[in-house]
Image (cartoon, rainbow, N blue to C red; front, side, top):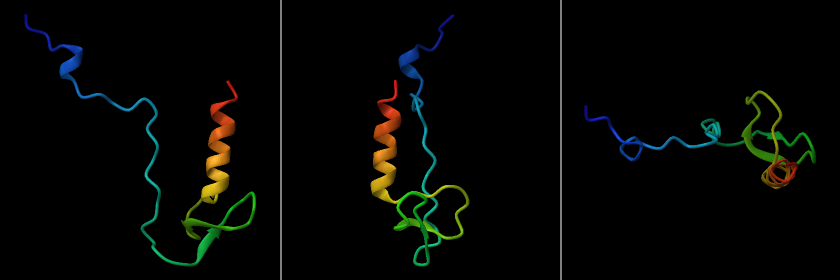
Amino acid sequence: MDEPHQQDKPQEPYCETPAAPLAAGGPPFAECVLCRKPTEYPESVKGATLCPVCEWQEAQRTACSG
């Protein structure tokens, strides 16, 4: 009879981004795959790592590629 309203449910984020794997802490840091500068990620991280600048630029490109 009393159904919970949509407002009563906690909102889930539209696009959930995974937390950055920074648990390793310090150097050696992985190189950015675009500009070869050090990233915020340890070398043990798998996949394509980007430095903060290239990561921001890539986000701008994909956001505007509509």
